[in-house]
Length: 196
Image (cartoon, rainbow, N blue to C red; front, side):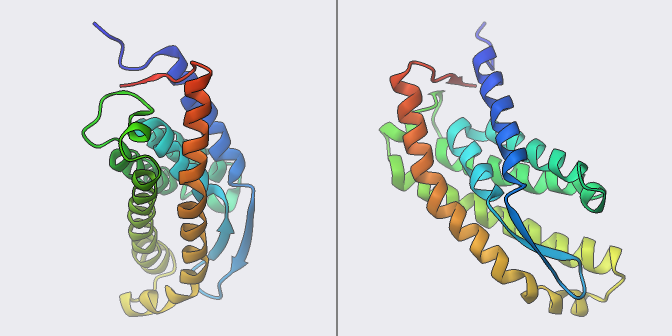
């Protein structure tokens, strides 16, 4: 019986978790008068990249690395579980879209679709994340934590949209070419693990 994940695959996922964690430090936090903060961050690039490189399992690295980052800051620690879900589903969605209907080696999307498939998958991952992120800001941050009405919580959302659009555009532009380059390098060096 073939193992679902090789030790090499687990090592790559661990490394990706560490990269997601570190990339969260590249951020500019912008205070919003009501409803917490928003930020410009490069972490979304690495979260999407994780799914593009390692398929749906890359979602685990996306969620875990981001949640661990949240746990290092007392202000974010209480939301680490939500971050794990949201960022994890971002990487999972990108990975599912990139590897839909394919099994075996991780470079299959490169052989069948390549960059356009990765680009579409990055868009899918970002859309899933921002649906969850905006829902969290309305119901959890706005209504539960701040005690706002639904309408008031919804009215604050536009304050966070500009940073969100920037973060998603950067992830969509940067992650697909990085995935193509990294998968090519892994294939040439014979380090490409099989996908479960």
